[in-house]
Every structure is written in structure tokens, then in C-alpha cells.
Image (cartoon, rainbow over the protein chains, first blue to last red):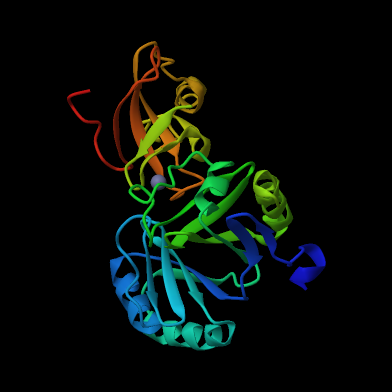
Length: 181
Length: 92
Ligand SMILES: [Zn+2]
């Protein structure tokens, strides 16, 4: 159980909250144009072609991670059906589709100071003009890699590898102490 | 910290990258007739340029892709950034 290795209670400070997001089904997809079209069809959502952008449809999201790589998020109960749909849609097309549902863990950081707290450990510019809603990217926080996706002006979805989760959580909490966490 | 322009992601902090050595070094198509010296030269000899240098970088904590950069090694100024497989821009 994830809760055995990571604390899952929310951390509140003045203007910012760090919480554990619900479980997701996660697939890492890699492929070229033909396979991307087939995967979009099977997933019911066009995988974004633009760099560092995410697309959402209902319970599903596709995050651009690289020019031929996407992170697909869905409800845990949908994963098997998506894999099955992809298997037939992608038959004969070179691609990679890996179930990484349990590899990663999602944190939510929200509130008017959410971007300020992120900026405490990452040099990207989190101003809305340079990191708008819908932008997502892999980057680094302290010494650990993570993916940051801005879902609302004051809300971020953060994907971390399970074994990095206690470090990232502690790192963000340290920056939240300044605001009363 | 250097700001390195990734051809896929745009300008990003140096922390997200790993250096990949001199660019445009082609592996010999048929290594078997090469002498040990020629093979060693392919493996290990690099220009170590003082000045304008074409080099590979990998945006490992980003899009994870290798790409090429032309950098002045005396000033760290980056003059060009282009995708793997593309030719070095003639202007630099
Ligand atoms: Zn990149």
C-alpha cells in the first residue's frame, strides 16, 4: 500500500494546500504519427502535438512529455479497457504502451501561493504568462524528477515516482513552513 | 546557471540537462578494417575546442531527447540549438 511508505494526510498553510490526489490509471505511450492517431482514437482524446501541453476529456487526460511520448491518465477502473482498445487499434503499428499506474503517485498543490511554493525548489517561471493553465512538463524539484501540470491558475497536478514521493512531499512541506504549515 | 534552449521545449534551466559530448561524430560504417589507432581515435579523440563548439545535450529531466547546441566555450554563449539529425546551421 502506498500509505505504508508515504504519509497521505493533507498539509495546509496560509494560502497553499498540499494533498494526495486519488489513484489514477497511468499509461506511458510512445509512438510516431500513425500510432499517435490510432492511440488518440482508442483513448477517445487527441494526444496533444504541441510541446508541454495537456488535453482533457471527461475522466481522461493526455500529457505531452516528449515529441513522441505522452502520459495518459484515467480512472483506475478504465485502464484495462483502454489497453484492450489500444491493442486492437495499434495492431501492426510500432509503439510502446506501458502500464505505470503503480510507478507514480499524484500530489495536488493548490491555493494562491501554490506557484510560489513550487518556485522554492524549481527555477522554471511559474507566471501564468509563461506557464499557463494546460501546460505540463517533466522537470526537477530539489534532487528528484517530477512532472508538473497546471490544471487551474492556482492548482497544480504533480506526478512523482513512488520512491521519490516522501522526498518531494517533505521538500514542498519545508517551503510551506514559511506560510505556517 | 545556463539557460539552454531545447529545440522541443524552449529555454530551460541547466539543471534539467546532461552534457553529451562533441556533436556530429559519425560511427565508422565498417569498423573491422580500422587499425586500433583509428578506432581509438573515433572512441576517444575530441576537439576540445577553445571557442565555437558543436556539442550534444540531453534534456533528460524534460522531454528526455538528445539535441545539438553550438556554444562558445570561452563565454558559454549558446549560438544555436537544433534537433538531432539536422545539420549544424551554416551561420555559426
Ligand atoms: Zn526538451
